[in-house]
Length: 260
Image 1 (spheres, rainbow, N blue to C red):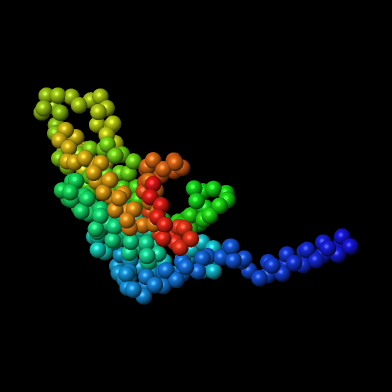
Image 2: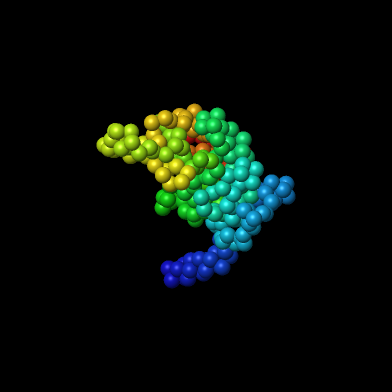
């Protein structure tokens, strides 16, 4: 009897395996439908900077049906520091956010626009926070982007996680001997600010703007654009140096937002 039960159990396992993935292991249907709706609406159009890609992991749990490779956002006129894959709806949402939130905030705080977006990436077939169990991250569906900061038109950098950062003017550091002073002592290094437009050290005596109002506007605007916004101060401690932005569906009807 025991031998018979064992054989039946093995047979059932083989039958289940031959049927493919269980519903819990399949990509949610709403994801493909959201991509198709975005494409039908013409929210993203292929160009020299946005190229259609083959499906990522077709039929698998991770991936996307209609991904794009993105180098630059058209409406915002802001390029990425590297080409990344994104789905249609994330391209449209990110471009909208950059054009209507980030660029106006940069003009208000620094008197100039953003020319480049620094990113830590988009696609990664993994679970949330790289855990060994639990739900998959939206990164697994090219439905998320991690923004590390921005480069202004004159080359100055404004990076996430430095709310007290005073963004310096683009002037080059004058000759110390000509001034008759010494700037040695590490004061410049403490600011952790990127180089000017030509790679020269920025002149850090006259500051060009305070990053606090900028980041406040950028974050608040992101919370009105994306369904998930995670950044410095989140309890998981994994977003201290970037903003995680995605279009996940939260709650029973998929309309709840998470902004931390």
